[in-house]
Image (cartoon, rainbow, N blue to C red; front, side, top):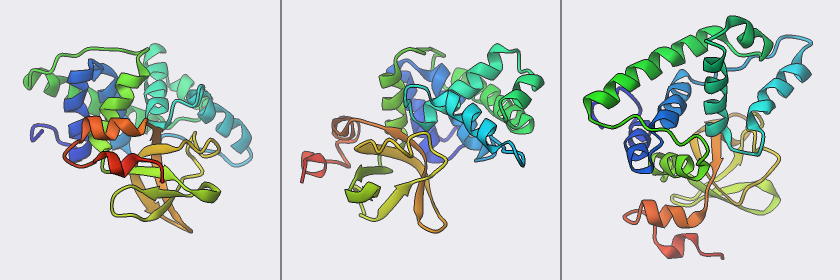
Length: 212
């Protein structure tokens, strides 16, 4: 993983994508996450339209990571159109930065002999690769819509900008926690709790995921 100029969790996610045969999708997700939270913008007076455009990438409650992949894929399908970015309230500069990072990651895959493989319709495989990177960032739904992190317990909430903010999945992994009025999980994906034991048996035991 030392070959990847990324956060260790993102690097682990990319390495795991080889096992799940979804490296093409995962490097897009990693590139988008590396850009930060500057993908979408909302001009004055256009918030409703901007929110609608953003949520269109979340169709099927796929989670924030896969929604980011959908954004990148849609942009790529238009041959990286600037007009598409404007119409979808997406920052052109951020997307170009994500493309540069993704190109670099694709070259690194070749260097470390990870085959570029795609499984665009196997969302479970993609989610398992995400979980492989972020297994230590797992949380479980509590009463009243809050979440409790599984290890080193703390109370957190899904960030309002998340596509899952109103869905309250029982188990999630998240990219990071930010503190504003509450501790919010940013970039959230639903998972099955048994994946935690399957993917990280050194970190989780069955007792960690059993219903209380």
